[in-house]
Image 1 (cartoon, one colour):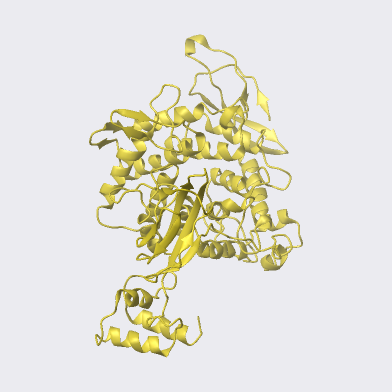
Image 2 (tube, helix red, strand yellow):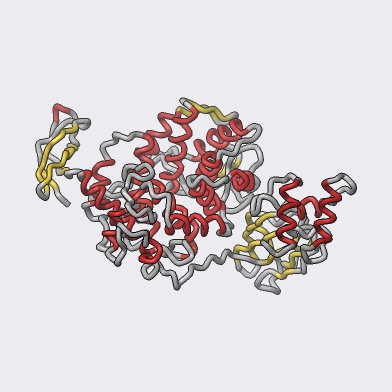
Length: 536
């Protein structure tokens, strides 16, 4: 890392200095940090990176993402984070102005079809795909059914779990970016922030951040788990955006009190600065990582874009101890790489020149060095050997059973069998399904959706499980197939010649595909005909 020891200057002093580098001139800023003007001291500071270095890092990072994408369109270094990684990588592409081509299209398609069980993965999917222009309003509507309480925008790790972080700010962001609106939305949003997020900020002098689990209130007693960088950064980022968008200066929660937003935001930044290390990166326990530094950078930037900690943090990421590997990645991890790319200045679509219009900007094609040509639309062919086309990714969410809506389920014994007692510890079973004392699930599901839950057994076992309740798409007469009989029945329903049963109302709502609109109309009949003909 390039460093200098200039004479110390006041805290807010910023110099512009011209410096030769590689034959070109770059405007470099010098930040110096000192105490009061009357007690100046000498301190070591970094020369922040130039625009040339920023552009070079962006190109190398994007080239890594292009090469490391799996054949099915996803990214992951850890299969359990495949949705989160792919969503963040897609956001990084959009942030860099890349919104065309095989890589972008495959990522969008994979993410749109990915099954998501947790609130975290569902929210990130919605937020990322909203940036592509896809209609994510139906998904946001479904996400709202997973809230911890129906009167506020607050979520836990899984549907109906207790409030947690960063799940709540991620859920709020997803609904906001989707553009979905509903009655009492403003009230439910402010209630979530005022009565869940703000009271959950730690009040100890040692740090005013957020923990993964919120306050637990018993009478007058409030107990919180320790603050951590990740939930603090993600929560602070969303609160800052909400505060700016809604012109909030203070919020009040009945029975708790009034919160000054400027104080809340400043306290959050102050906490993050306690995670700043000697190398100017951020991380827990004195160890900086590119991922945590990027998260802290984005949060601090949202509160104060001119904060003096930002330039040194960017130094750490681009020319310091946390800089890119030779392959263009940060830590060989697509998630870390995508997060760091999001800290760089955003580019409008087509800012990066793409002469052959194959969706791979010219500079990236040159960086890939794999035979791709900036003047030939060969993006798909040239990337095929390098992006795992022969190694499709796997998306296997935890699954206990798949159930059919309004059909009795086959009794299911939770594992392990034979314990003296069982209990649901978090989440919820589908309405209509119950668990008996021996750990057997049974009943008839009366609500469509994905239901994740935790359970424990008396022998000490604790596990997660999931029940997926699916509608019988198009099978109006419930005979196990979609055919002309279902078409005839739907025509009679639409003509008012017969009244649809609850099961038929759900079965007939097949349009739009994958996102039914709760309206039975001509579009449903047209799609049902295509389904019956085997065209879908």
